[in-house]
Image (cartoon, rainbow, N blue to C red):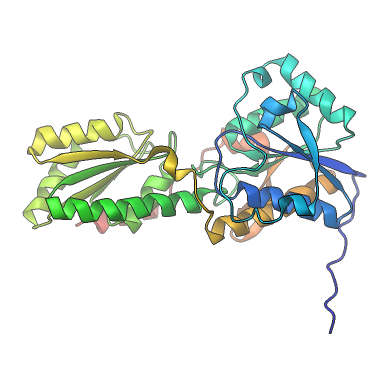
Length: 335
């Protein structure tokens, strides 16, 4: 029995060619999103131009046609095959005007931007100033964008950080040391909180709860009194004082041997886990269909398993809080 292909999506916008770029920090799963955009467009009979080096490449006109075979064997790759960059020129009206001109010269009817809030700012300005239709796809490990339960790259970043925490816990227990581990999250503690719960940390510090660093001293003393050989403390990079400040407080307050480990950009790389590949595939497809429907100026996201659309400006204007129940759970289980 031959399976029938899905029905074609109505193209009420009349768009025939679109462009896609990745911008800002890379996130595992970006290639899966690019692949989904290209293959969905191909299925619907549309052409796709891949913009190299994000907005930096767009204002220079660095674009090339992409077909289904160009994105073969990419779904499992970290980073981004289109490359990414941050562009000071794009922050100027002249830079955005040049980008809009290149898109129009190539007959592009809409642009899909895979990135975080900074990238969405750039896309929003392009639409407002030049009438270019834009759709955002949330690609950032920080998971800090309003309008989606999770962002592309977040699941992989958590797994990468957790693997490091597990290894450091073994060393900490063997040497009876305190390890203070800093994970990414300049403005959000989502990674730190998930890693703290999954890694069995004794304490976690996140930007959303700027409490005194000194609170950790009693926690560590209590852990020692209970016979724990080593302790793990997780700190989001955006917490005031950072991991070094927390470590200094522990050292001064307890005299115990304390080590700092800053995981840094290792969390951005690596093969995306299945959850990121699936999320990226669904959102890449949804972005193409949004353009075909004539929609612009929104981010496609997933909430409760459903694909939704959120105005781009709301993704950074509205605050996405950490899961407070999970935060409580982290405290409860650290006894």
